[in-house]
Image (cartoon, rainbow, N blue to C red; front, side):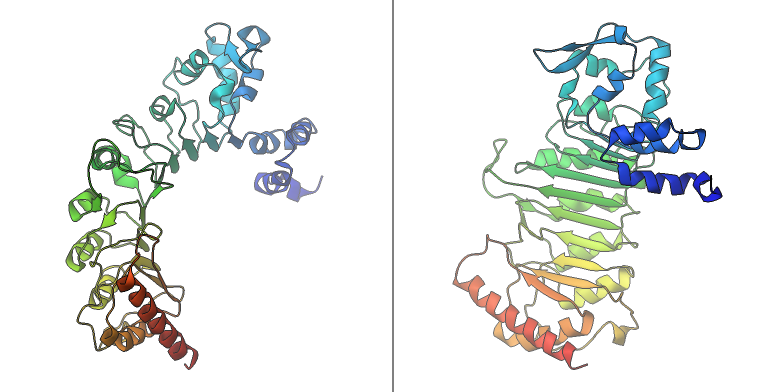
Length: 388
């Protein structure tokens, strides 16, 4: 055998091309001693269905419930059987509870409560949690977990019992408009656990909004006090918030938030759902943002253009060098005719990739006129860039 095939990383790369064929990976694992570890590592790298783990145990430990199309543990697992499970779960890097209905509820509870303090998934890096057992799952120790995706923030104290010392990336996909209380509870869960000390990226994305929930009346609005807890997350690199709330954040409030995140690379609020208000960051505020956060590569915010009729300062005039990939996305922003030329010059002066968008929630002639003016500014900015 060539020496290069004795390098585990190279073998795992090769075997990863067989991820779609568990039979092939299992056969590779029994081919020779060199393949004995890397092939199972690829085979068990991602797990959505726990039934293969049950099949690795002695037959006496579990049985199939044909009427429910799921497995069930026949008895409490012995320490030896837990050791067998751990020999496989140590290889799992990505875990999802999407298909955990293949184990009955009693067996799931046993699975999530092993009779030892030793982590069942010591090398797990990515966790997708959103099933009925989400809180039980999140209460388990995951010492190596880096990325957490959850599909529900409605459960009270969702993150309060988590033990995730290495987490850097938290994403919550929300199926319906969250109440202020649920949003605050979720943020407090991050703040009061170890997640708050390590988190670098936060994404909250609402997928659809059937209407106002939880007894709250009127339109919900993002205000400074809603996001103020995030200022405790000093390691923030990226923040993406997209909920069906209007946004009421002023220039000074946005700059106050960013001042707590000196390593910020992306600052995105309601790129899909929109702002629907007159606030936002002023052009001069954008320049102040660059001075505070030197690593910025993307901002997607409303721009407050009121009174901006003359382009005076650019990043270059302030001694700032922006990343060549920097992009600004202007969202739901009012603009008057007298500001078009100045804004065009401003956009051309800060980015080669200007972009603007309006959400579907901005109907009416006033917004239609603004869309035409922004398109005019966009075209002028691009013409100026093309002539350089």
